[in-house]
Amino acid sequence: MGSWVRHIAAPLVDLAFPRMCVACNGGLADDNPDRLCGPCQAVIKRIDGNRCPKCGEQLGPHSRTDQRCMICRNVPLVFSKASAACRYEGSARQLILNLKYKRQMAALPLLSELMIGDLERADFLDRVDVIVPVPLHWRRRLWRGFNQSELLARRLGKRFSIPVCANRLRRIRPTASQTRLRRAERFENLKGAFRVEGKNGLAGKTVLLCDDVMTTGATASECSRALREAGVKATYVALVAR
Ligand SMILES: [Zn+2]
Ligand SMILES: [Zn+2]
Image (cartoon, rainbow, N blue to C red; front, top):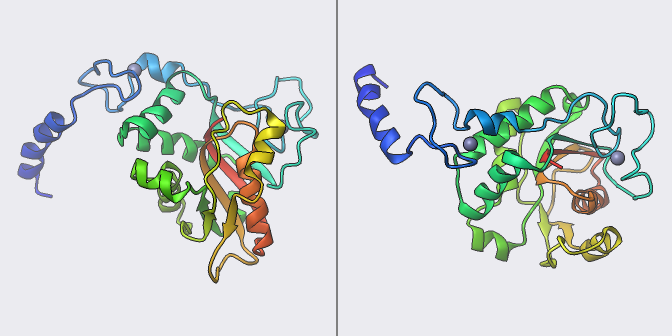
């Protein structure tokens, strides 16, 4: 693009997308290159330091990292390991809600950058052959117009040059909302909800499952079960938040 086009295009872009924080809708300083205001950036709680070797939960500085945390210790999780960029609270939570329920697409690059920063430090990324987004049931996808996990997966795939397979793992039955269910009920609710369909090129591959949020791990675990039944060698899980 020629420089004169950029000079004309930039104000147009600002008109179409007023300079507002994508999380809180507050005004942004003109010199702020991000779409997130200072206070919203400051309250993102990144998960780093000691983590649970299975579910990625943040652990205290003196916790053991050679055994699973109290939260997931007694839960049968089928995936090898999960990694989340930050805690599901504050502006990170707001960004995810704005993307999913207000269709604020400007949240997408912010969320994917959080994931990318996290995955760059993960010890499993070089083993990954293909990225698979956690699917929505087709009815919910139709209603929302997009699957946020797929949009995130495509950005990860592009950044890390890993292929994305978004049309093989299917959610074959709609599931009741998980939010009011206890942990055991969440696993029960999802039994048999996912299936790998069609002749798939996933057999023998190591898959990185991509989702926005993980709570108990039930969804990621059931997806992993379906993938493993289709011959997938191992699954890892990448999340924005937990
Ligand atoms: Zn803000
Ligand atoms: Zn854990």
